[in-house]
Length: 167
Image (cartoon, rainbow, N blue to C red; front, side, top):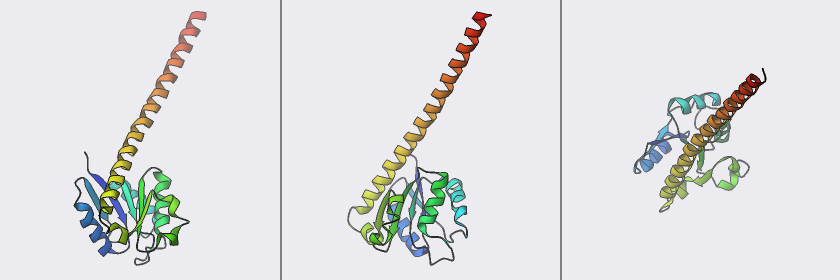
């Protein structure tokens, strides 16, 4: 199994350190945090690509750093380029405070929930399963493209042979 890499979009480096330590307990999972969030939300996707990120963990409130965007803006920007990346909302605040944005995330929980027995194992399993399905879906999409290309080639060959027979 290849290592899964997550990007933790969080404004407090202490929270990043805590979550990295929690996820280090699980083989094949690595969390990258950013000491400084980019000034522009548009710069986040290049980090996803450069770091070969498989999934996201996002805090909603990013006001401890001098950025003009929230976690939901970060997710929107990344999903504009990669609509299938798995995204988890992880926040200190009650989830009810974000009910309008919850649908954009694949999974949501509070940081206190993550401390509950068995919860991090559940989250890791969800991440692994989602990333596995994402990989399978990419392969299926590639196969569909190849199949369509083959069908187009066959149709072109049929046209050529039928035109050649008439002449």
